[in-house]
Amino acid sequence: MKKELTQEQFSYSGRNVLSGFLFGLGMVAFIDEAIFHQLLHWHHFYDRSTTEIGLISDGLFHAFSWFATVGALFMLVDLRRRGAWWKKRWLGGMTLGAGLFNLYDGIIQHKLMQLHQIRYGVDLLPYDLIWNILAGIMVIAGGIVVYQTQKQLKLHKGELR
Amino acid sequence: MMEHQHENMAHTTHSMDSITQILLSAPFIIGLLLYITAVIFSKRQNKAWPIYRTVLWTAGSVLCFITVVNPLASIAHQNFTMHMFGHLLLGMLGPLFMVLAAPMTLLLRTLPTRYAKKVTAVLRSPIFHFLSNPVVPAVLNIGGLWLLYTTGLYSMMETIMWVHVLVHLHVFLAGYFFAATLLYIDPIPYRYSYIYRSLVLILALAGHKILSKVIYAYPPEGVPRAEAEAGGMLMYYGGDAVDIVIIIILCYQWYQSKRTREVRYPVTG
Image 1 (spheres, each protein chain N blue to C red):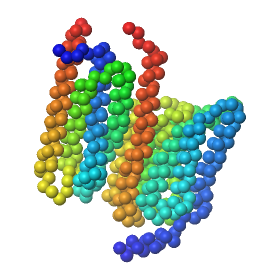
Image 2: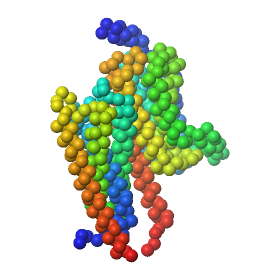
Image 3: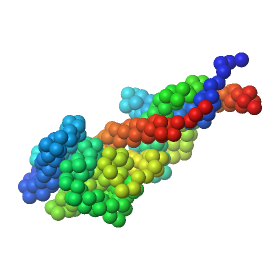
């Protein structure tokens, strides 16, 4: 069996997932901005087909993810200060958060709200497929890891009894 | 094209008059002089005041000052992108620096107790109690900007002097109270929880972002499209840059508060 859980990791198991999840979400939003908007110039700041709800969603999500990145890192430092950082669970949460944000961005924001497309002047289908399949894989992988740690948590609970 | 050229011609003759510049810059000069006087008095009473706070107040005052006097005032009057740059300094970065300089703390410790008590009484009055809820400055701040850029107010400000003065004072004061009610550097009549302040900050930041894309898409009255697009993007990313500072300080205070709680109530066993 794997390494024993410490009492702190057990007590702060929820915060480990939350911190990882928020960091994953913020990190992906940041990568999206840095690579696809600024370096590649594939994404556009605004395109003429952007709906009003798309603008609102973009504003809310970017504001939230900006805060989440910083907040999650402070939570991580706090967990480490308490000796409660559970790396596997944290990374699982991160992958889950990153995948879910990409899925939301790829399906709801790009497709339904027409915020902007992945790239302009090309056949979009392969881009959309790769984007969303990758996001789906991240959601599943992150979900499995979080589920595994959940089982470990239950086992630990059993031991405590 | 001809129309734009004509507009620019009309604008170049329209530089900022000196009365407006004096009215808007005087508060910052007076504020800086008062702050430095208070620091000197404080030192004489053998109460040292951190140098970094004096530096922050000076930097904040200078940033605000340069946006309301020439050459920047006149350039901002003619060019929307530069107007937005000035707005970032006067409404966000300048007031943030000044909040971090803790002017009320300095004032209260420099004044004789008798007067300090009076100031505290004023700060406890209903109006300050109302203003200390971060939602109020957030709405005044972001709501004010929505009014300015989506109605005829922007073009009114360009032509009517007192509207220009009022709008600029509002932008600064709203920015100051916004930062002051999110980060408790100075004493404040009522303290709100970290989670509440974080939510207000996120919503305000979202409102700022949405508005900057709206400006990009629908230029305000009398603003050429290219300037509105550059101005909107500057507002979006410039806002990010200043807001990350507020976010980091707020999260750091939150993180610190968790430690003091642990020390105060140690868990045994």
